[in-house]
Length: 346
Image (tube, one colour):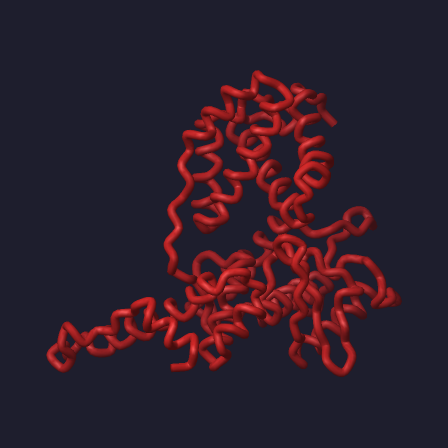
């Protein structure tokens, strides 16, 4: 292991994540994980950009240029939404604000980062999701004659069935799973909010197969992570980046058989996909909102808007060869009132 070049920086990071956030700010474990991910990703980006090791990163590298470069990188390479990019920027700014309070030499860095503008997010932003055919093709891609294939297939099934955020899935313990008469999974979302979602019959069947391979002999009351990796015989929690890499690998392979699979397949896409399919199959938006653990109904309304827009596009495409049959002013224009009526079943 190399020597840390800026020990003060890494000590500040440690204290920020292990003392300040949980004790002084009293934030949830998920929020701490989000902040840790943002800082880890940024350190790795800087190290790669500078051609140095992560341990050689210094405080002056938390500059406007490098932070802005990092945000562009995760937008282009990881297909993160503007909201997620804003969260990453807020995490880095929060750390530098903490560092400024501890050490005045960081104040100039905080001033630089304050000049970086947050990404604009629309009330009804475009929602990317997969078709049901694409979902099936993804499920079929892993080689289930191998242990890794069994794990990866079940993870995709679990992501889709629960509609959970990736960190919620990675945080699931065996004791959070109930396989009795009414199978359920307990998820811990933003702000330490807990919700329970049902597991479908087919998911439970895959779960039982997965458990015999990855948790053989382990009691279901265990606090062991449902999903894990093994390094040198030692179990470790999976990272969301590792999941992203594996999902993209299967997507690229499965696209040859199913062209409907998007170019970018990432964990949150499964959440959008499940929500859209539930809505398209008739589930009321209030139930979809509860399923997803949304604190604001406006977030769920995005799916109603996206589905209506998809129908409008399909109608326009179908009528393209005979435009005279549809007057220009009869195009479907979605308004807030239309969506609210749809929400209340009108």
